[in-house]
Length: 213
Image (cartoon, rainbow, N blue to C red; front, side, top):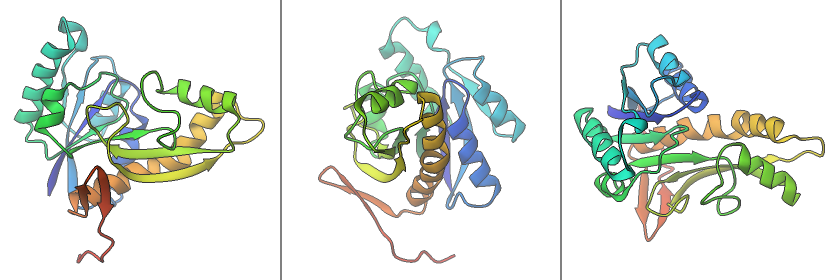
């Protein structure tokens, strides 16, 4: 059983999707063993505690720079024996210390179909604002491995979502979460924990062979 550590900073809707999947028995091969927040007031911590999941806080504001913060976070991850790290609305960029230590063991969900609307400055509601400004007809979500290139890691899963004429950024954000993010993230976590993901030459491959129960 793989130990899953989820990193959060805010409300934790994607964390809740993982918790719900776990409670339904759909998080195959792994278990959420700790939720670590960069903010003590993150509502995601309440979601975790409500479901008896251990929590830790490593406050970003307590550290003068990203390097010192990443060192403290790395130590916390080591202490939790993390097999997989999931970024669920974590608002601090991980430095190479953590990315190299957990190569192909950190995944993130991004609210667009990468390589569109991704990279520096594309996060949260900003993504959906840009989608609507550009007038694309399909958007969606992507789950990918984290590398030192922002939103540039190997893509694990993607799902398209329709953009409608009367969408606002808030409405579109909700539809992308409900139709794509909350479905893709638990599935990607399960694929990893079942040992069904491999990375070769910058691409992620899924073993679709039936896994024995």
